[in-house]
Image (tube, rainbow, N blue to C red; front, side, top):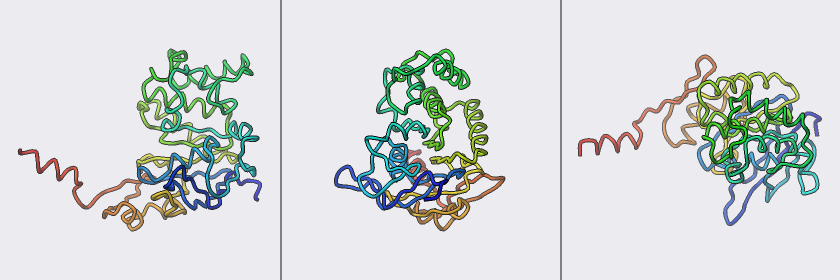
Length: 275
């Protein structure tokens, strides 16, 4: 295995019941790479990230993180090296925990706060929350924060250890315009770190930053394509996935999608608007 290989998934799958959510995932990610993980709702993106973050175990295939196969004995040494932002995942676990404690839990990659928290850790966590505009919300329970504020807490938690692998699941969701700008600047800065790999999930083509030059396209739990981003976002490939004729434009480093047919929703609205 190459020294710079952070993720090596071989025939990885996840089948919690009778149906595969992920199947035959073969993927390698190296330090310094910036990946877009793209797919329709229900394609398995968040599940894949939860496995790569070592919070969820795969049921099939093999996975190595930092040249180590995750198991019950080493998972707590792997998680602190991975920053994971996903409200879809953490909203199931956090309710009454206060924002400050959630950020501190990132030190050990656990869902609760460990006793081995120093004064310097607290200062560090508070400064992160302050930088994200949550100085007045540090002691608020998670469920009383707005969606954007919860997202900021998870971003602070993910950045706490300056991780080697950063997994961002819809990181801009719910953020106000200023915080989104700050986060974009931070991601652009992190993309300069050669020792850090980033994987970024989004549903919006216009959120894809030029630095994310590699793309893994998931469809129905399987890899539909894995290549340079510019080779994935083509009219032919995405029209096939979406089963609709679409056109992708790429201008000034930004992608956008255009349809050649009215949507079913628009057709419905026009049909019933005169009733």
